Amino acid sequence: MTRPPVIELRDATKAYPGGVHALRGVNLTVEEGELLAVVGPSGSGKSTMLNVMGTLDRPTSGTVKVAGYDLSELSDARLSALRARHIGFVFQHFHLAAGRDAVDNVADGLLYAGVPLKERRARARQALAEVRLDHRFAHTPDELSGGEKQRVAIARALVGEPRLLLADEPTGALDTASGEVVMELLHELNASGTTICVITHDHAIADSLPRRVRFKDGEIVSDSRSTPLTGEARR
Image 1: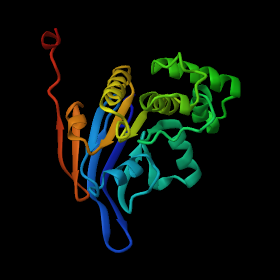
Image 2: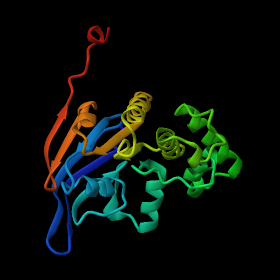
Image 3: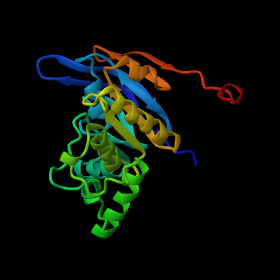
């Protein structure tokens, strides 16, 4: 049986008091295995898109489905369970717990999944190895570089094996070299099957991804894809 899209928005709107319309009739489908950017300037609506796609906020009107589940039909408790099971988040400023080593920071990503501590830590070590940090297991955030902190944050987001990784300005707090390492890692994770959406204002980052969804004033103004390389072109 075909799996439903990871994300599906139909005529989704989001309005706030005072006549602010952050989303205006947005239609977007994200299929399994995609790597895309949602790109736009500050105030364009892309942060609201992150919150709606990540089930952190409900739309004012329209339909939002995550992994086939219509958010309007779920209680807050079921919505939290859906988020924990299907979505991983990576933020610009890492949000790591000070004084806790990399393994425990990543293991915290499984706190609400009912996984025993020993298994949480074992899976955390595996996730850290996947982001090439198996030499930093015992290091706390203040002993890590910015790029390493972001890789710990990515491992924490991935440890629960979500269908979707939402990365909000993942290179925004990093120098150029560290940012390139993080983006290379996101490409590798996508190649291994993870669906990834990068929210960014950086057009260079957006242009490096296979799909670019450009936002302005709460609306999608373009949705473009790179032409897939043929086998001959790859060689």
